[in-house]
Length: 145
Image 1 (spheres, rainbow, N blue to C red):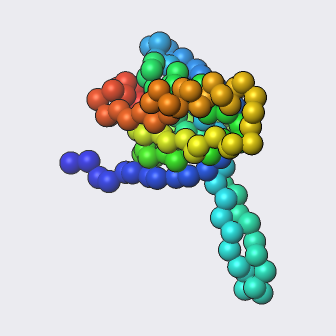
Image 2: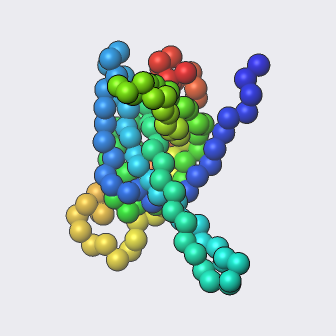
């Protein structure tokens, strides 16, 4: 029986997304995001906490659509699961990194103040229904598990 592993996160794209290809030829879009949290410290002063995460969107169509829309500064909401990679450095030190494997991504609407052709193209693409795409775990290649 699988235990629960689900995460919902909202943030902004830190830099334009990139695509890599696995040894088996599977496309993966990497989207680095930042989340912001504001809170009051013990003195009543507002503090800002920023956390950074890498989102992975697996599969040909899913990664292609995300790559087109995940541009620096764009807000998004991701539903997915956590995946931890572990390895040893050349010095023999154990290290790891946690990724979020996207199952569903929603992009915030484009700001009306943008008038460039890129914003118009993105808006047209969004209207065609590729802004948010959902797929099941059966669509994720075995190498991700």
